[in-house]
Image 1 (cartoon, rainbow, N blue to C red):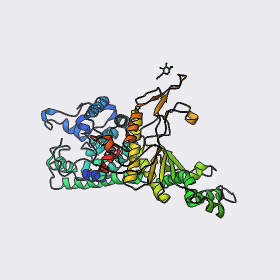
Image 2 (cartoon, rainbow, N blue to C red; image 1 turned 90 degrees about the vertical axis):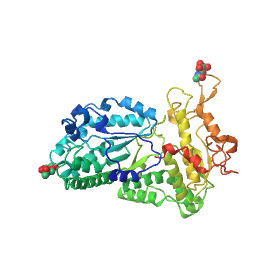
Image 3 (cartoon, protein in one colour; image 1 turned 45 degrees about the vertical axis):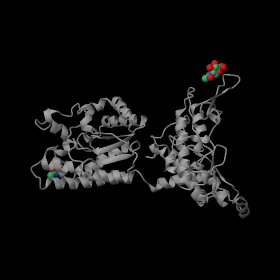
Image 4 (spheres, protein in one colour; image 1 turned 60 degrees about the horizontal axis):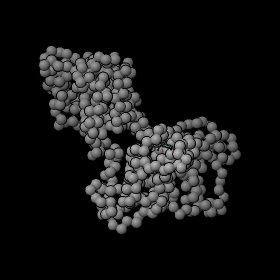
Length: 502
Ligand SMILES: *[C@@H]1O[C@H](CO)[C@@H](O)[C@H](O)[C@H]1NC(C)=O
Ligand SMILES: *[C@@H]1O[C@H](CO)[C@@H](O)[C@H](O)[C@H]1NC(C)=O
């Protein structure tokens, strides 16, 4: 049902705001593929009604079963994998989630279907792009005037809110309203699409469009008010960083604990009736002695967390002083360690933080790596993926942001005793067979990959011989910035990582 693509204003607006040139996607619309028109408590949509009215759709077809995507998630994911797309655009059926269009009844079974679909997409490394409204208004709302009745603006906001709340932590790309021109003009002017109204062509389309625009804005605001950016979350993230990196770096670089740490701990100590802060104070002589005792910034890095404000009341504890909870995004890849999620973009950010916060020091990355657990598998492609992406982010920090990175050390040479977790979490390039008394070191696949990066002092461009590429970065246990000739344009290195930029 693609009647007119040219005036897709509202949709384009959202796409522009979040656009990325690197999205190859594929789209399917609810009604056109989903089927299951009455399954699990779904309400009727205007298209169900329209399609069940004789002579409206060619050869009297309807969406009752369509392609039965409702019951064929596995098959559809396989089709997407075959296409090798990295995004999948689909739309949500409003009446499947809210049968009469209002919050009176939320149909959990309907929401569940979208969760299963989104989970399956994410597991296949395909990012969902979700359209809230693609023409299938709940019939119950149409019965009270549909898009011509301005109460629909709040109805749509409520629907969007329900969907954002339920799927918002998995879906990061939203489209509010698909082809509003067609809803207004084809649905309410010409009447050749649902709801098939054509007898007020001079007024109905304008009123419908008016309400579509307001509904779009309400959905946009409800998302923005509740979802993406909260100053208290940003502040919480800053506390997490200041209470961890800054706890030690701030004194060494500036002579004393950060004001942020000092103020929070003093306030909480006094509030608890103590005469002074639980955080000890450095004397002026100590400050002078400590300040500037660095030649470089040595930085171990593995993962990133998301932070949110958390009030622990009067508990006397470091965590309560820090006042933040941390979580991982569900879309981040796992490793063999519960605390380690693959988040390369965080690496570049925190390197920039160090540069800004501590006066652009030379930085040696002294540890960086990823674990696996379970049965031995020498084909450690996840480790190759991790190093490619993390090293590339370090490269971006160095080349594009001017972070003074001097060296990079991977963790670690061979699977070893990872502290409390014993040998379960394996971080090594080499597997050590501990059933064999001679403890042989057996290389995993990542060994050859990492060796190539080192051999080329960076990534090799396709079609170029490693020996010519004496470019920029990254020797293990060595020094960088020794490039004599920089043959390749920087962008070629950066390209390697495009797939993860979004
Ligand atoms: C508009 O919708 C509301 C319910 O949302 C309904 O009470 C009212 O009667 C409708 N107005 C018209 C003109 O249909
Ligand atoms: C580990 O060593 C044992 C004893 O020599 C041997 O039987 C086993 O095949 C080795 N495993 C691997 C994966 O090399």
